[in-house]
Amino acid sequence: MSVAVAERLAALQAGLPAHTRLLAVSKGHPAAAIRELAALGQRSFGESRLQEAEAKQAELADVPGLDWHFIGRLQANKVRPVLRRFAWLHSIDSLSLARRASRIAAEEGLSPRVFLQVKLRPDPNKGGFSAAELREAWPELQALPALQPVGLMTMAPLGLAPEERRRLFDECAALARELGLAELSMGMSGDWPEAAAAGSTWVRVGSALFGPKSLSVPAWDAI
Ligand SMILES: *Cc1c(COP(=O)(O)O)cnc(C)c1O
Image (tube, rainbow, N blue to C red):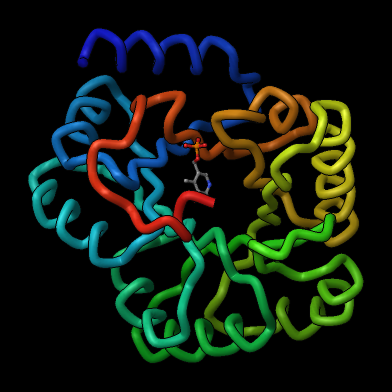
């Protein structure tokens, strides 16, 4: 597998514009696969389930400089352990979750970088602020003492045509500019080129990098 992964990594890196970094989404893949990518220079990894991530982080404790991003839906009762293990959170999808994360981060002496997740098209499977909700919550979000809001995160609903996805990503980029946020977490295996073209600073790529999943993952996670 290593030749294929190395080739996919090189191809992705060659295709990404200078402003876009690669978040390797390792959910569903073993620690050994992360170790291999780390040996090739990849440092940033995304996980969406706490337990799975904890096991891999323990196995990889000897690998220096790994940068962990939590990208899954964040349940209120998992906030504390997630904050302890992840310096970046991509999925702050409500004001109440942001308040809770700030309170717990302050208790823990942490100041995580967070993306506010926005939902700019109807999608029953996903959470997120609407543009109007985000504008209304923004003054309070900015004032939360322990969070560093760095950007917006969004996901395109399944079945959008490429030009519709591009429009969605452009809208998200415009909203981030309006709020003065520099980072954009947009684009996955199936749509990272449109997201990168729209100014994404982090593409979250799993299957196009690692290949098909080798650990079992609950169905809700595959959305
Ligand atoms: C799984 C996941 C990804 C990666 O998906 P691929 O299609 O495998 O690239 C990106 N973002 C989130 C939030 C995910 O859950």
